[in-house]
Amino acid sequence: MKSQKTLIFRRVARERGVVLILALIVLVAMIIAGVALVRSVDVTTQIAGNLAFRQSGVQATDSGVEKARQWLMSASSLIADAPPSYYSTWNGGATGTPAVFDPATFDWSGKSALPVDAAGNTVSYVVHRMCQNPGDPADPASNCITAPSSVSGTSQRITGGQEFRCVGTNCVASSNPYYRVTVRVAGPRNTVTYTQVVIY
Image 1: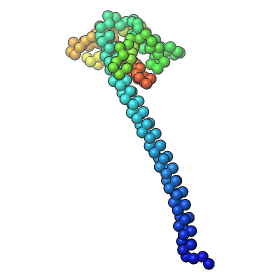
Image 2 (image 1 turned 30 degrees about the vertical axis):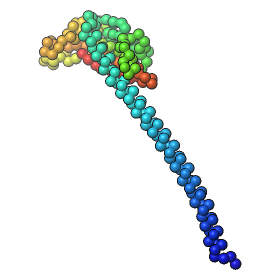
Image 3 (image 1 turned 180 degrees about the vertical axis):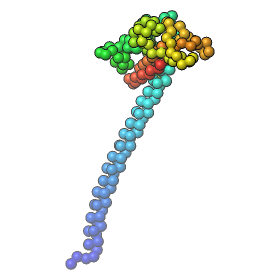
Image 4 (image 1 turned 120 degrees about the vertical axis):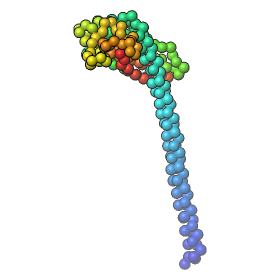
């Protein structure tokens, strides 16, 4: 018959082996959790960086819109296309059938561009007059989309866009055609941002 001491010793020896296995399992679980934590921190940092570049691109579009607005204010004639970045129709420069302007597939090479900014963004813009056909916006054949008149609720067309330059109460009671300004910002890390603004 075995003594009481021998049985206790064997039971303790087996328990030590079980504790070692449990400790190894916990260690492996902690290593996996640590790797997952490092990976999630890396992904979070990448997302924050990408959002910062995207935000920088969106902010840079303001300068493109302002440059296009200044060009529209100083243009002598808005009746016909004015290369490289003004089209007198809403689908000018578009390809495909039907010809629809899509900024993602549009050929931006050679279009009006601003100097590269401090963040490394290249800003390009193109302006489309919202008319179906080129020509005088007063001509019904141009089929222009115009801003509603502020006087007596009528909508009239103007000739040549001269009244586009009016400020405040100096504007007369006729309407101007809408102009769509599309700005493309190509930034670092292959970030590309598009913004469209309609002005009149």
